[in-house]
Image (cartoon, rainbow, N blue to C red; front, side, top):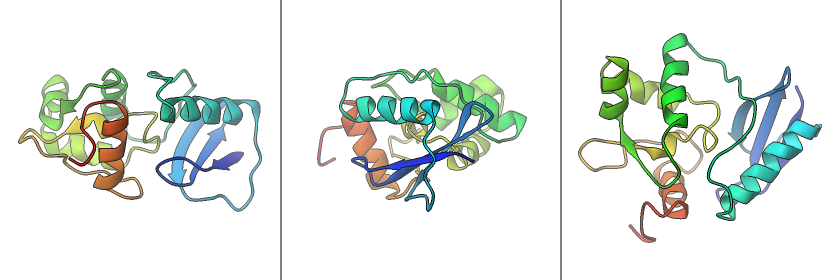
Amino acid sequence: MPQLSFHSPVGDLTVSEEDGAIVSVDWGWASANKPTPLLRKAKAQLDKYFDGKLEEFDLPLNPAGTPFQKRVWQLMLKIPYGHTKTYGDLAAKLKSSPRPVGTACGVNHLPIIIPCHRVLASNGGLGGYSGDGGLETKTALLTLEGVMLKGI
């Protein structure tokens, strides 16, 4: 599977491609990098995102997941840059409960690109974040997007 690793403000990231689509964004460095045009495009878009110059990714995505998880991820893709929804908001649209939505967020293979960091707890709390750094990373991404002030 072709992969490309690079440094980012939230740590080293590795983007993976399979069958012409981005399938994962993982924290850490791959042992063997094999950049492709699509992986270079993904890196360029992530760099622009971190520079505050990209609000919506334009990449073919194909993360592995259940039909329910994929529906949750499709809803997350519709949350605009700089905005948030709650787990309950997404659950209501799916006629589900917040817990399975949270589970789908937790197994999101494309964090940052599929913006699970934009999903918060209904009590005003952050909820969780499965990426490296946990809530610190979620806070950094929300701060980058202007949702949170630094230090909160």
